[in-house]
Image 1 (cartoon, rainbow, N blue to C red):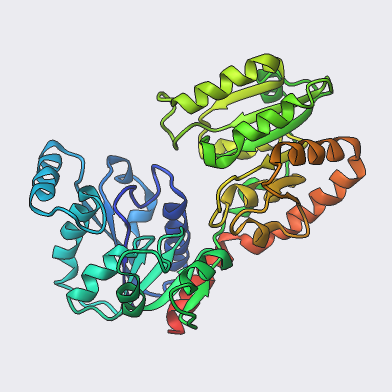
Image 2: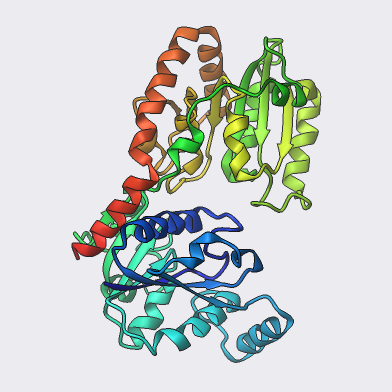
Length: 391
């Protein structure tokens, strides 16, 4: 088959700047390159770091790039905004889409896959396209979305990252064209290994410390503030420490926002017990997870999936998390899942329980590793193409 992949236009493919959606795209493109299944054209914003990436030398995956950041492109975007007000997305994304469309309309594809951008369905449908597939990783299409009926009826397949997102889409209409395709990680890169003792010392951790790890972006939705509050309530236990891995937005390590600073101020009361690493490159995150005894990932919003949950499981960590969105689908039965109501006390109780019961931690660690195997990138890529082939 000939397949077009349209990103939303924020981050490049290959995922040289990170991004959960972009990593998923890389997974199935790598699978396609190895298996030689389909002829795929990927439309992506340009980034100079892609030049030497081995993925772009593929003979079955073809990458077409568009400049959206140069002075000329920024000026053109502003002009687009002036003449095209009140479109589905902001002018940045809409300008990118129109650049892509100029090439797309010259070619014939069996399927056009829209990555996490249901609004582009609306424009394509108006222009006569009937072969559109949506791969959805966020709660962006439901009965409250703009033009939801037109968008829903114009799609021939909707792949959702969790049953939670599937249910949100089904609020428009229950249909067998909606299918859950769980997200994935490279399980092997997170598999258990011996912790780096020098890294432990570098982060102020001793062998006697009971280390809790939080990993991911740091914002109000992720529950980091509530986790610090839970640790404050356990401050009289001398060797419990919290390792917070991550920054406020991907690799933007230099621009910590006010929220991160407020967390550091709150943590000063027990600053010797809370370590902020700041942004850590993704390939180093497994090394940091191996420093921990347990992971606590207390999402306070309705998380569509939760890749950091799978990463913690794959690292063999006993896990405490919240009943949020698609998270229970990933770890029900192997993790401690607490309610968001009275969450600080719930987290503190769950942490104390695992601290006091090493045998329970050992059982949970084994269950975590086994559960993580369900979310391997190879399974994800195979299921992605099977879903397209079975339309």
